[in-house]
Length: 116
Picture: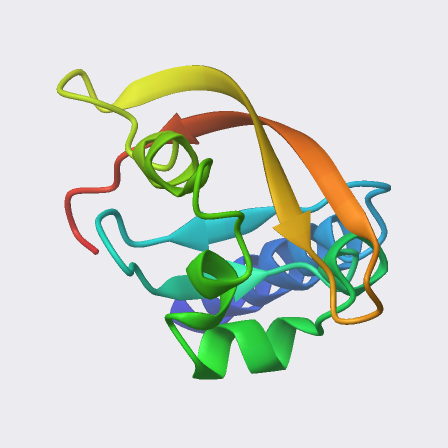
């Protein structure tokens, strides 16, 4: 019986990852606070920000360093779901891509996982 439940969990995880990796936007899991750590970023982040997920995960300060200084406080604050643990935020900020283009706007739904 244990083997069946392990296989079911593995199948659900594989299906969830496949769904996340084909979203037109970006799905992510992140620790709150500055600079924060990305626990997961879907591959769509490279198309939006011009930086691949692996690089952003490896360097916790990379994302915040590319935000325009005037927008940084609001952008960082939007990552925290707040005291209730669940929230939706919409914040506009300028993210300076490596190719010189500027990407703006982000809407997020968040929830706090107390185990992480």
